[in-house]
Length: 294
Image 1 (cartoon, helix red, strand yellow):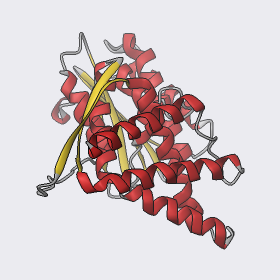
Image 2: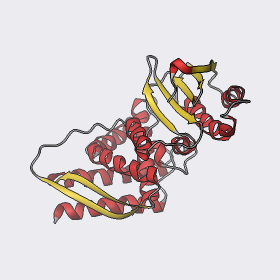
Image 3: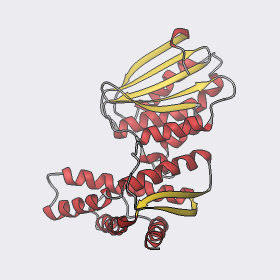
Image 4: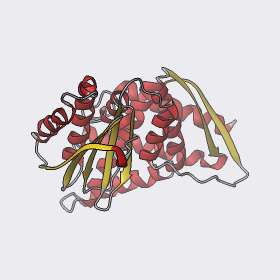
């Protein structure tokens, strides 16, 4: 972590929300690290910085500000933008065009995180000299903080502990990421005044059905974040679900089928769920329903 009292050099510059923002940012980082003990970490730094800036340009709002701080043992890179929305679900999908970003940042840096900013948010990472001594839990905490997962305990007595064993971590993560992408577009659809009443009605009904699964899916993402960070190819998920929530699970399954129908009809930018991801989603939902009915 940067000791502000031990800062050797720092730089700050505003970036325009255009494609050449990333090369400008990388040149600033090269200038900061040139002829320093951190020069050997330049490739890692450029990779992580490119992802931060690209995410801010594509999904953030102006102003976009780059801050570079170098101390004796640490370099901290921060990219702030005017959107308070955290770059959350995308970290789950290492194959998506923009979805691979946070996983690359986690792999290339020693520490990273997302923090609120007076104007919007600040996404940062750090490079340390020597070998990283940070524990895996630091990355996991950053993943969970980015998701804003602060679920409360449900005191209801009728609860079932659903256990989903031996799931393919990457496929479940990609399936969940695709669900988030579809739901995000449906939220935008409901805010678009130019969309037909029928389109808005369908979008709202899908979102309402999906909202019933918010708590369960947040718990699922929480555990997936740990598995993804640990590089586990297979994962066992344990979810607490109320027995009478079986109808919510069915509604969610039908809602995602309806979202796929909209996507296939060309009403959304997102592509329809690939067959393998649809099978994964339907498979674990069937297992949830089976255990709730037993």
